[in-house]
Length: 162
Image (tube, rainbow, N blue to C red; front, side, top):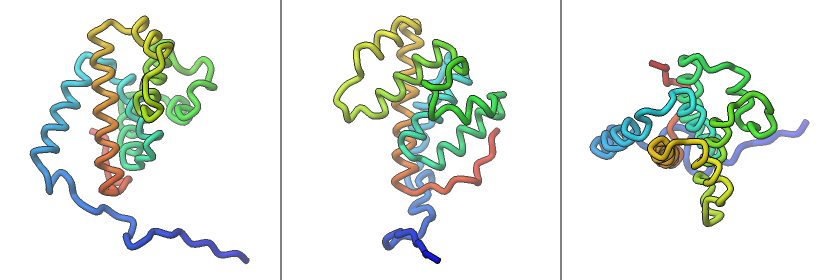
């Protein structure tokens, strides 16, 4: 029998810090930014964007949270399960959702240096300008939340959808 162990370095898997308690003003400002960013956007679209960005960023805490929020908002299990392969899940996502997910991926993996023109053009053709601005802010905000949670090792599982 072969035994495998997971190398966790010097840290136990658990939160490194309770960020909201340690930096409450930053947390409150981020929460205010999130509320402003998502204002006027379809709730289902917002949750799909948040889940997809969190998948790309390997943020277990945020995947857990936004999957629960999406379910509570009535999102189907099939669409949640297929989100990581949305391009191949023909017929499951609307054109608007596909444009938002493509933009989410481009902004989230911006290390490539830019958002491709074809991704921008599709999003700009699909969304009204104000809605597109809100979508960009939503993508940026969830990426920031992901970085807080991944860095501090926020533990998934305890979140309850409101």
